[in-house]
Image (cartoon, rainbow, N blue to C red):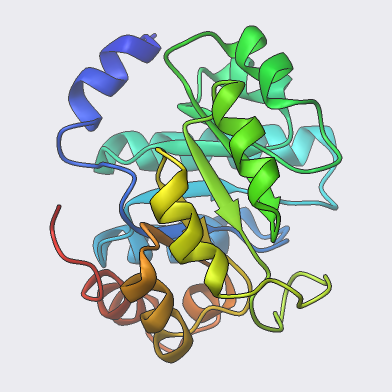
Length: 220
């Protein structure tokens, strides 16, 4: 099995935490999920997070295994939302921690120093400071706009992106109802990645949609 360190030796130079951050919808159809994800990777998505809040353990394992193999082919990091055990079982590239999950420090201790650990910080800059202190690889802010997929209070101010860019020495991700139009000012304010679900997976042409999002980012 490829080790985490070997994986990053291959991926990191060409796939920094920068660009389109793809997040999966709650689809039980694994074949469709993989097919659309591949189109998005072909369009330039920089990273893929597997998130399926209603899946059972067996479906999560099946889908995550298939998506990991896909990301290996395209040499893109594969992140699992919430399930540290699944991340470790598959030797995925990282884990994303929500506000009600284990702390970043606890997760970092479990996965070791080489994996990506992302943290949801909503609209709270102090959460981002804490995540940084505890060993996060990136911080995520939002929601900024109403989402077709996730239900949450739309209370995050765009100002937090500028504040984080100045105060947090980590890449930051913006999430929540992201479209080409409303993500553009957030990128200009300092967002390193835009997380998208419906704008890609429900697009008429997912590859083209991913290309359009990716084109918003300058090459670092």
